[in-house]
Image (cartoon, rainbow, N blue to C red; front, side, top):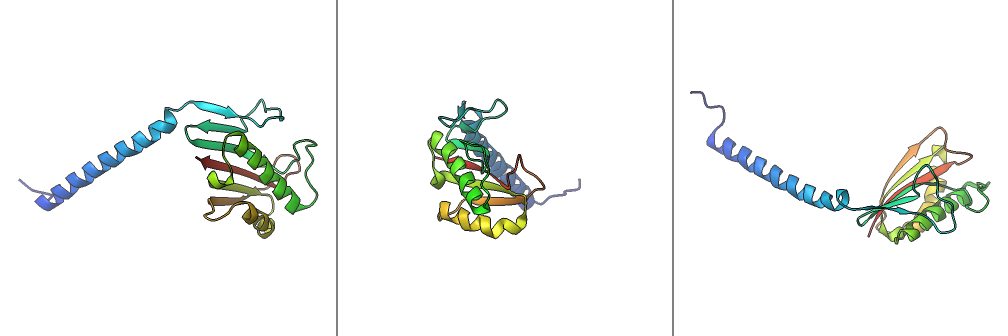
Amino acid sequence: MVRLLSYDSEMTLTRCFLRTTVLGLVVLCGFSEVYGAEKKVVSVPGRAPSPNYSAGLKVGDTLYVAGQTGNDPKTNAVPDEFEAEVKQCLENVGAVLKAGGADFSDVVAVTVYLTDMEMFPRMNAVYTTVFKDPRPTRTTVGVVKLAGKAHIEITVVARK
């Protein structure tokens, strides 16, 4: 009989299997809170909800905020100055966070979409006034076009 594994290798594989199984159970138990939790639609008071998507969706202790642009919610106009657009975009994100019982300090992940990556430093200057240390993780993506006249769109995930 040819033995492919030594005793030590077998024990290592057994330990690895057990650790993987235990880790898998821990992960599944942790995710059961999210997957078993009820989804609650979050909408901003005074704003008409979209028939196409939810502004926010709360699942357990996690709030998912849909992409927000810098459109003024009353006039739907995009500010002419880019920094003002970024500020309005973040205010729109903040309104959904507040409606979901969270604030910027609860944000753990941010995705920023920019139509011009040359605007990144200007976006960052406004962004860092809103998100304080420790700042959430962030991904910034350059895109060709966003809805309407928007130059920026931001989506976040927050956890209480």
